[in-house]
Length: 206
Image (cartoon, rainbow, N blue to C red; front, top):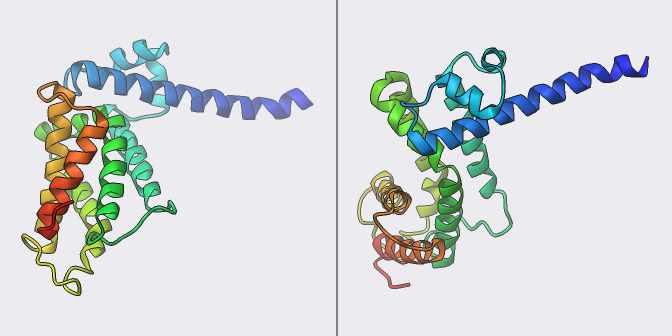
């Protein structure tokens, strides 16, 4: 009887292990050869799983990428729950905290970000998803600029425009570092981006 009760739990555990193996394999292959050049059979082979097992978890490569993007978004959301989080970008330490958090998990999830960018080129749904994801990121921190007027600071553009410039700066440098066109350690990148973003937003030196 005990074995019978345990078996459903073990099946659930094996299913979770397979899903994780498929996700991990997809991330590796997306990093090595790109999303568009990766086939489902490549993913299952790299994961050491039977080809048919893929469809027990995902309807297709697109659904797998959505799941990876969801994992990425959930990880990003958790940063706002830490005790160090300060939603006031007039404080340079608050800017550094957000730059460091975003840089760190974006580097860790670069294969997913790159895959979404590539998928958006050929898939209208992913183009819309990418745009919506970017808008949600902006929306989550737009209140971080609320203290600028009271501090007598003038943003370089509108709230949305100013934050978009910040994200573009981070993503642009991240892509250059990942592609090897710029040689920086993570600490150097975070320090430079913090000074660049803080000065750009506030006009003050950091």
